[in-house]
Image (cartoon, rainbow, N blue to C red; front, side, top):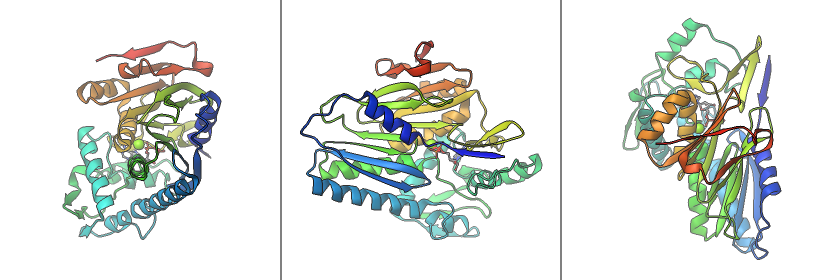
Length: 344
Ligand code: ADP
Ligand code: MG
């Protein structure tokens, strides 16, 4: 059995360095790197004096660790862990956890359960949190799925009650929501522009210091880059089968689970990249659209304005929604392939 973790971060950074136009000389970046939330992160801000910038980045790192401690599904001190082990009793949540959970539950309902934050017992059975990978029996999955239903989570003010045996996992939205908090912090600190990479999530405040858009790489499933996207003030968030998976008997099992079956989502998509104003929405939707597959993803997009997406198919095809027509192009080995535009 083989387990692999890819971190898009490093590749994205390379492309940013390789393709970016030279920055305006006056604006020196201040950068901070850390490992948190089970991934590597890079935070870069511009437009503040060095000491101030360092202090803001320290605050940002502290905020990330604070959110990780609240939201971790495995740490026994986290609010999520306590809620998951409360035996059906209600627990009190901090403002952060409550707000994120409330947004996440709304997305679960909106995506018709393609996103389901009560999927944790199933994710654990496959070994994705422990690294003890295995393929559960159908009967085991059927039993675990009885405990998966986000509509049963009762959030009333800051009190949360889960039916006994139900367990939350905010892993599909936590990094996106963290990105939003970082943008807030940087904006309030007076940074002119900033970009963060939280694993496969990229989020930008403003444009580059010289006013040009940020260039963000979209990873090809086989490695390298499939495309480049120009953005400002957006979250660019990718969910894909190649980000975390294991192989057994020649079959690849990815960490995104279809709550309808309890099995890794397999819809022919290699990855979904969502471009949205807010990280939490981009993160929730990238996971949900990966579960939905192309047809349902398109239908969802037509009914829910305000975001765009890039789909890379396992068959090597690429499609984008029309809002990205002027800011996305295929590159590298994908450069000469047709790019389909999905229209309203
Ligand atoms: P990543 O965390 O690698 O950026 P995602 O944002 O797509 O990727 O989130 C995947 C994580 O979310 C999984 O590791 C698991 O913890 C959880 N998860 C898996 N499937 C679902 C689902 N259908 N709904 C909600 N959460 C899910
Ligand atoms: Mg996600």
